[in-house]
Image (tube, rainbow, N blue to C red; front, side, top):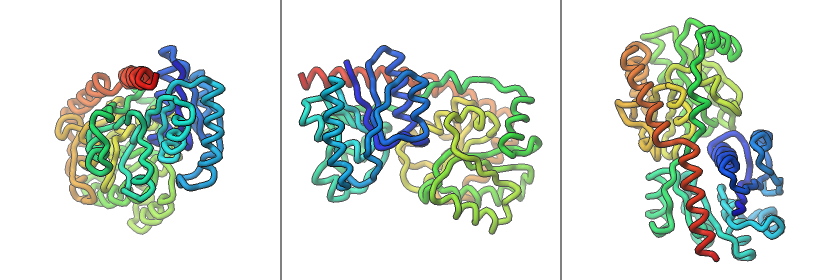
Length: 370
């Protein structure tokens, strides 16, 4: 069976990481898999995993962009040349391209819904959901059913997975101290942090206001913001206005998050309204880090309040203070939640388990098309 994973880009973030991880896992299982995208920072990682990448001109967010129509014929040529059995599309633009190509080539068509879509006219008139739709969380599954009327029997709930083993490494104190030096963090400080793109909905400002209150009780704390995005300058400005420059470190996006997660004590994740799932949460838990997060979207599929972290209402920084301080002060509670988090990821969110379920879905789609 030959599979084409189609996505607009392969940049650092949820969709790029999902595509990369799935491609490498399928390849390791002996599946003949190819990736087509507009390129990005993760392309070399694909090559390292032995996966072929084909660059196509689809870097746009609009399904009405002329690039989309040109890409339909380009991808059709790829599908015919490579004799692809199933096209698996990730982003909205990739969904539209994959939909038309599947009709032209009679290939199976699968899409993944990575989050929440606005009910715009384009999505209503041209759903392009595919023969089957993968929902990455229960919240996304309900969104598809209620907001877009996708039939439940077309939806497969398959949670995201990660390569758990690489996050299980135990770092020595010297290794952690060296890494703190490398990232500009103080060795004698507790570190709280997040790995997320700087977008308005991720709530970086909420974390700053929470840190402001945390420092009143525990001054030796630093916040690490890992990522990039349009909101970063605004958050840097707010950091200065709150006089937090000595306590906040901005770290560039990391292709491999193992090192930075090893020196974060408490992982914080504070979307305001919507979150499909959160691969960063899985990586943090696998690294043995308890989580303080907002209870929105698919986050509750990962975090059990009081078990492997704490869940609070969104956009309320004052609610983040107490659970964060508890985890920084109570070693017994910290260890208990750390163990629970790792166990849950190992049991439920491995990349191999995810790849097995996706591969089974491919077989079903290909057989139905045949």
